Amino acid sequence: MSGPFNWFLQVVSITKFGLMSLPQRRGSAAATIIGIAGVVAVLVGVLSIAAGFKQAMTVSGSPDGAIVMRSGADSEMVSVFGRDETRVIADTPGIARTDQGPLASAELFVIIDLPKISTGTDANVPLRGVEPAAFQVRENLKIVEGRKFDWGKNEVIVGRGAAREFAGLQVGSTIKVGRYQWPVVGIFSADGGAAESEIWTDARVLQDAYHRGDSFQSVSVRLNSPSAFQAFKDALTSNPQLNVQVMRQTDYYAQQSQTMTRLVTTLGFLIASLMALGAVFGALNTMYSAVAVRSREIGTLRALGFGGGAVVVSLLLESMLLALVGGVIGGVLAYVAFNNFHTSTMNFQSFSQLTFAFRVTPALLARGIVWAAVIGLIGGLFPAIRAARLPITEALREL
Image 1 (cartoon, rainbow, N blue to C red):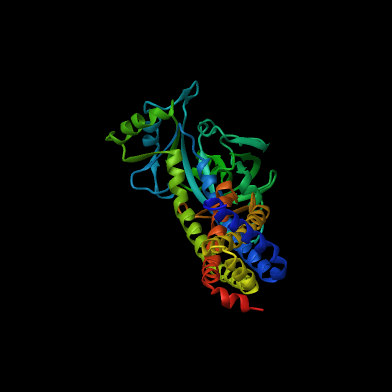
Image 2 (spheres, rainbow, N blue to C red):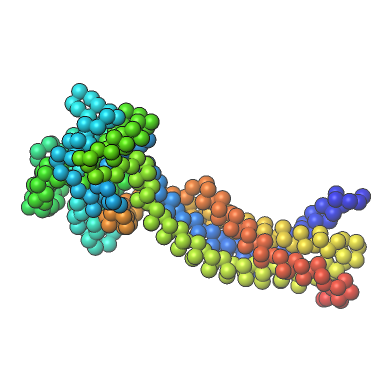
């Protein structure tokens, strides 16, 4: 028997013998598996923060939704409109309408301080004043406890994420905002989107509480269809009465997530890279130990006609197998520990807290497995080359 098939049988045989000798090296093998599992768990865990943050922002927008802000503003915090401007925007063709009028909500966005439940420290929580159309502009918003606030009253409803993370936001409690006490009358969900981090109330009442006159910061609209966006945008940006920028909701929230996602991803890869370096040395130690223990065996096989290439490939396979076991264990640990873990962090675009859940996705688990395989490949390469180059006579003299 010769040719590629014979070479394949050689690889299988050497790999089999290597795996059978693992109990003799169980200490170093276990250290390698645990080290690689740690790398994968940390990598997947940190990246799940970015994935969860991005998911919360992604589901916040709808294809037929748009947001209008002052030209040059990169967030609602630095935008401002007067009442006349918001009326012009609401009357623009392309906006969906009902019997009650256009689906356009002029909104006010302010930041209030509330203590985190977990730490007791104050955090910036977004308080949004909306108009009646807001509940139809954002179709995914649903009251899950209590009721909607009454228009004209200083009542608030709270996003489910905010109620979970910040103190004093349960139905029946009261918060102090501006000059008023605001009863919490309801809790709402928004499919895990950014709105769940917010507190909502009547825009007119909020204007009075903060002495904002009749000003707003943005206008959120629902269009007739996603294809109506360009015509709607062109009509507004060419109107000499206005100085605005128009974005799809999906694009706006994607832009809002970029800074945080980039920061977390960079830190995740940096930490994982440093840990991976240690794991590579662990794999090197394991495989050099394997070569030392099996030197007579390898020399005998070489004397019987087994090729150096088969030795290299079989040792690489053994190293990668150990790495993949560690990768799988690390992925499972990351999923159990991090997936759907709820927290909040600063959205650097709006300088307010965003609540979200970590997401350990199949793509992240696959990335972790790839990292484990690469660590195993690097860790096994040099010991495998050394074994293949080991003189047969020297190997046979090893005890």
